[in-house]
Length: 485
Image (cartoon, rainbow, N blue to C red; front, side, top):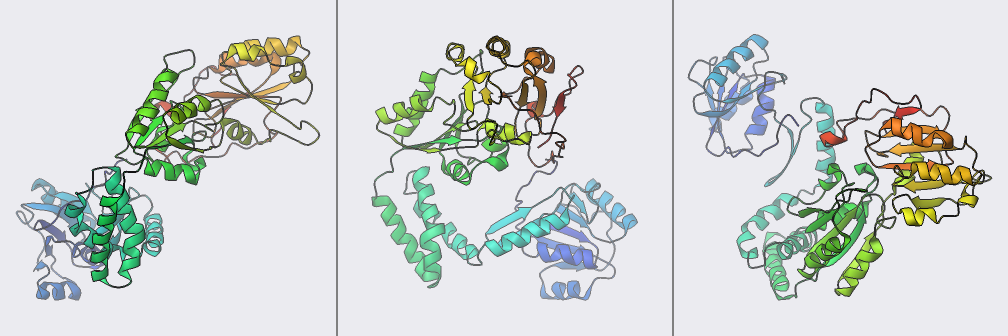
């Protein structure tokens, strides 16, 4: 993010516009919505600017900008539609301390003006870093249709009521009240006029003050394999309502960003064969916040019902007398098999597939290896990197063909996804050479579909943490492809 979005208080502050043509008019129509003191410098101003000056909504100086004209100005717009004059005027404004915007010149601008959806006092600003104005306009048009014209009136009335709403406890109680107002009581009352909205607010506050505090609730939510677009709508709603989010290490930052900014974020990540938060401590955290009345989201990578210790956490929640619900997510096996253009079951090949974990070596050793070694069998093996050599030996010992395909998908669905296409006899060797350091899933019995294209991925679509960006490896096997999904 090059341009940080802020809302600047312009009440009573100087804003200077240099120019009197179409570019200046476009900026002035927006600036006149504010409470700024606007001064326009233009030798040949448009008739509309002259009219505005006569009406007293701005000050017109019928000449070009000169030294000293921008002193004490907070913002300056160069809108002369002349590169030389804009450069001269912008240099003067910078030297006198104003922040400078030159119309249609991102390189020489210190700030940009976003597209705006105006439902005063609700304002939605849309920016594209100057790269795609047409996209910003399309988003603006979409929001204009979605946001009712009465939203501004509801917000204005609600703003005057905020002091009264402080009678409610801070946090969830107030949030429930305002949600009830903006999405239920307010829209119903506004159809009868503003006086009806005032009465609806009084009645609503009384009801919320008299009702018992809502008990805590736990939502066990699957975050999917990593791509935020694969998060379910129900998971998005749970994150939006959460007071506390207790999340795993595998949940990427773009998904965590979807939670409310006021939510308490607690990382209880586990690292295979490394430092981990004890399961007992995780259970205790969930229960503690639930008993305090919080809406808790226990956020797990993939599907929370697959190798997620869900049963233990539900038992702790039930023992504490708390309610819960489970929001499943797309598991890594589904994302991985989709990324190689295959299906995990196929008529005539395999009517069933196994889901296994290589992390629990004691349980791993007890599998029916003889039946898995038969031709056509398929298994999705989670957390199996360290168990690759063991897996290879057990299967081949029980008659599996050495050339049985095995595909290993690292960071399935993410921008830095990598796919290792190998065979059973080369599995441990190729996996060691690949040096995977992210979560990887093995697809035993499956190879990437022939001719599968490597699709492009817009790296700017999500703000992935630096540690998640694709890494180059100087020595990688020829069968290792970095594919972008």
